[in-house]
Length: 194
Image 1 (cartoon, rainbow, N blue to C red):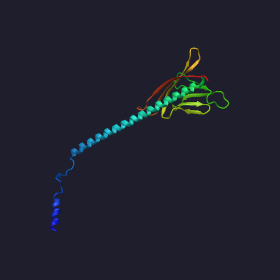
Image 2: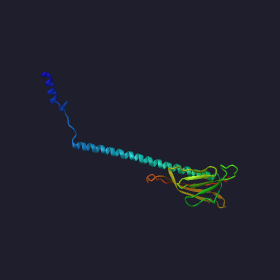
Image 3: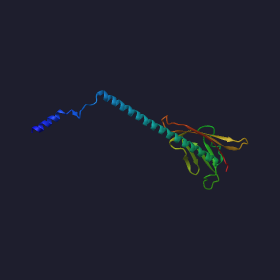
Image 4: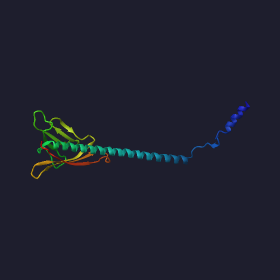
């Protein structure tokens, strides 16, 4: 029994020392310094991640604007090239938003020899095309707005219609001013007079 008591007393006397090291905690100053360093590292990581997300958002917005502008201008040029003539009665030239009405022999309704195609900006700022055979179809996506659409009728010196010059400006549809990236394209397409 004496031996057991001695071991308990012996272990109790070495309670605060393990292998020659003193057991102690952090001082208040060390705690504040470590917390500050960790806070700075977290702050820099947060700013880095916010920057990456912001750049990705701007890139996606710019890509949507450019893609929609190119699609819009190519669609307009295609319709002009395949038109028989420009229908001046409902076309609006030289101002924005313009409207272009074309007479064409493409996609004719049954029993007709000609049909009309109208290109215009809708009330919600989308470029739309209206055909007699299929109704209104929007060419640009809901992600963008057409803020400028202007048609100019180009006439050769001999008075013959030469074609249409088109100017279109497309912007990303957002309230965030950093993501509004206007993009303007111009083109010229000549009527082939089929």
